[in-house]
View (cartoon, rainbow, N blue to C red):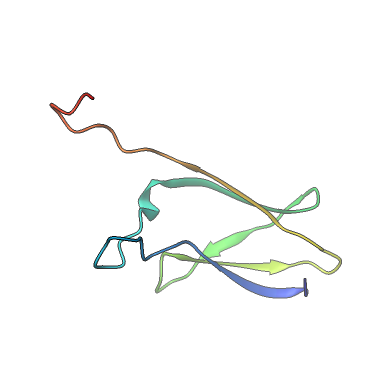
Length: 79
């Protein structure tokens, strides 16, 4: 892994969908770490599916975690 700027992308195109409508609004608590250091990130100003960060020198891996909020069931669809 090289130090410096890095852009991470959340999938926009989902199999079976005909438009780029990945469920990005259900992603919360994005955390990116290099070792024990939490790295700050920012969302791209034009593409909400892109996240920008700086990889620190000496980092060999990144640990990316997030929570995904499952949408509620539709009324009458309690199966």
